[in-house]
Image (cartoon, rainbow, N blue to C red; front, side, top):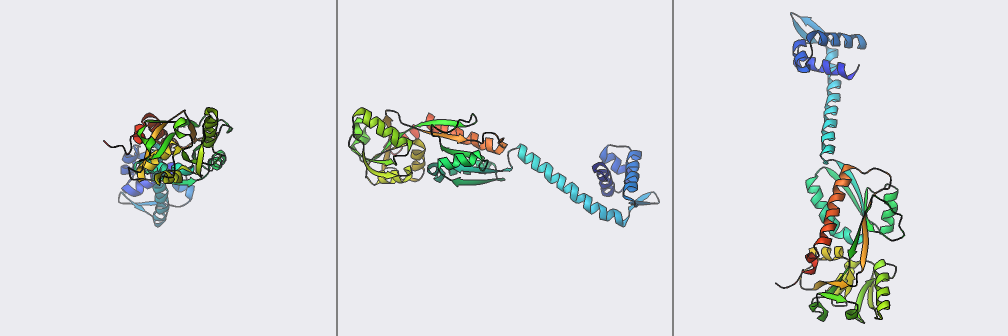
Length: 312
């Protein structure tokens, strides 16, 4: 039995006659009759009996119809799934994200995406940037959002950003009156920094040394989120990336911390990381496009956080 035979048999069962089945299938009556006869020969038992020009299914036909109907129901489900995939409404997305953006920035973007794609399932895991690179390379993540160290192997598919860092200060700090904070202004100023193994710390200490200034490290944290809490409490200033700043503005109360441009340039290199060889799903590419545009908007519109908390 093949699918064409099943289709003809099903049409006859649903319509109750050879002539109606032929019309539904856009075939001739003889062609439909021959297909039913061929099917009966193949399976070895009779499916229909004729009485007074009417067609009556045998009990065996009813048994067979139930099975065939379930097959066609499954085919219909597959067709609907194909349409959902075409419309980027179906799939499973595995994302690895570094700790900072995984708390507020990425979840907000992901929530917006899922509102438009309600049938998509997502796994979001917080990992270190090194772990994310490893997991993406082994195809355990479809997409990674992580810091990109200089030594990391290049992947042409990855989307790289150099995010210019800014200065976070207590709102009542005297330096908050300035639009731009410089190294000279931060000479001996109590600072909250990341640990010495982080690229931002290494760049800062090098710039301070080259300029002949002293970087007065009062507190060190692994991530910028607690650093901003210390800034809020007036314990020092901190050089942070703009994603941490925009995340802070999404949950904090204005009036405690302000953000100012910082010179000279110190950049945090981050990227959207893809598996080097395995192809990405349409859902992965659709979400990565949204994430890419949101990061671009931070670069294009720094006033989102630089003007945050300013009095009108």
